[in-house]
Image (tube, rainbow, N blue to C red; front, top):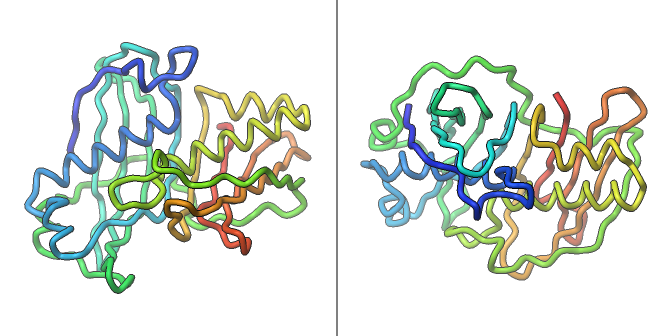
Length: 256
């Protein structure tokens, strides 16, 4: 297990002083990066070897988002390393022990030049000591677009520099931000009050994201929003597509 202490900053909050969803994802990603930098398989070593960890999927369960100034502990637990795959949990807790959010994630180690999987090395095994995984309800990695759901196409978004990370493709948290904005736009356009509340919820939420291909600077992203509100359980799936209709990422929002 690797953890770091922090305090929720003003720059990480929404207009009401709550940590944003994408900032929560940033905390988790920063946590895994900090652990990586403890070495020996640091980011500099990975770059020299031409390999990188690429995120395949997220499952994030949010009990509540913390507010401005709250002191928190963010942690990560690698629980399986095999072949070219790495599986790890994340959590955020208050210093008093309240569990704010937990997450599961699946990663692939990729040769950047060839675009092919690369096997995990002994240095990576030393960098990420494996421990038992968290007790949470694990959702399937793969997501299907809901059948019979209402579908809405939204205006294209062009990838800018602010969307990118150090690998020069759209940061994982940015896809989730795009999906939340898209849900909010559909809620406003179609007067779906329940969807609006879900898109802005700060507690009892689950977000799942599957990443299928990478978007780069200048690429165009076409959001397609699927809303299933026929049953009592409302949920929303956003497919963030390229011009041909192939998904960069699929994001699901659901109340829990």
